[in-house]
Amino acid sequence: MTTMELVIGGAILLVSLIITIICLMQEQKPQNATSALTGATNDSFYDKNRGRTKEARLKKITTVLTVLFFIMILFMDIVMPLINK
Image (cartoon, rainbow, N blue to C red; front, top):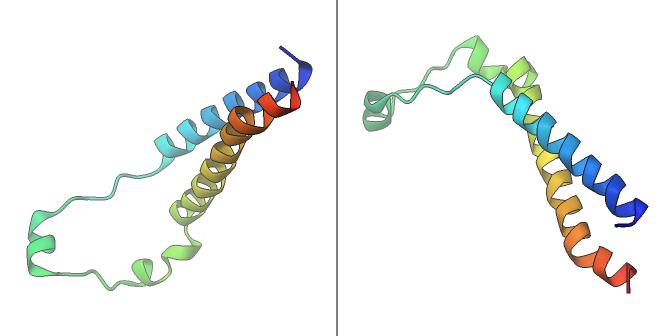
């Protein structure tokens, strides 16, 4: 294994651990069958400003880290074998 493979492998491990921790920190959305059937919504101040809350920040961080994780995995699988030839 080359040094580059070890560094990227360590980065993938670190990002996967951070993604797991952030996903566990997020609150679970309630699954209410009656609101799904009736189409009921909650138009409260909290719902209108959801983009500024802690949950919204955690969701954005999760999305960014997931894309980064996917790119690193593709790099390891596609580009690294071409470099090592």
